[in-house]
Length: 266
Image 1 (cartoon, rainbow, N blue to C red):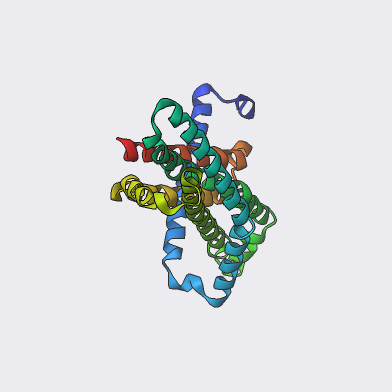
Image 2: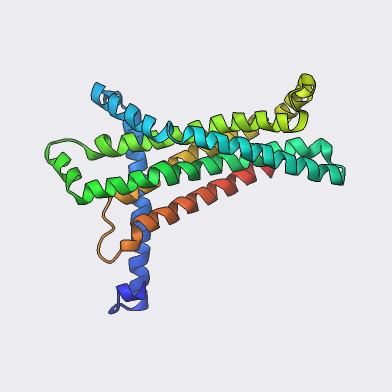
């Protein structure tokens, strides 16, 4: 970092770093507000825009959905067996299944789905957006009177949010089924106690926190990499592009996870 500004004093370097940090977060907030307005605007869903959006949703969701669902099923089955066997040795069998659901469904799967979508979809899409910017495609759209945010960024962000929510929702259902099978097997005798325990875990407050956490995580992984690709980092700020976007995305996911834990257990 110091080698980027060899002629600057410590205060000047700190000022430049703080200014780039504020600019990056300001761009994220600005694009988030713009995307929200465009999502709620009917004119964003013309025939051509709908086809483009549907294409992005399909490409970002369909290829990764089967693999992540299988991963969630295996993770649910393995984690259930580990927790149940450990609980048996300590005489805590009554709490084993509830612990699995709290750890797996409420905490691990939404975070894992967000990271999976980021690695497979939104980070590559952000890099593609940066290539379009560097090639002059976005400037060409502006000269033709076309908004590049509406044309190129909005479909990618919406597709990323849709993919993350779809993966999290479907994988949670699969994990719940695998947790039941891991404890009771193919036997319906445990269904009444399982549904009672499910209702106890998913109280209205916990369900609301879970839904907000999944939505905010989806927005974070969909929007932040796109913002890093949409704007030029500026002179001497190469680390403020892909790596800077990744750091900000992980920081937001960490804050969301901490807030979720506080909301669920305090």
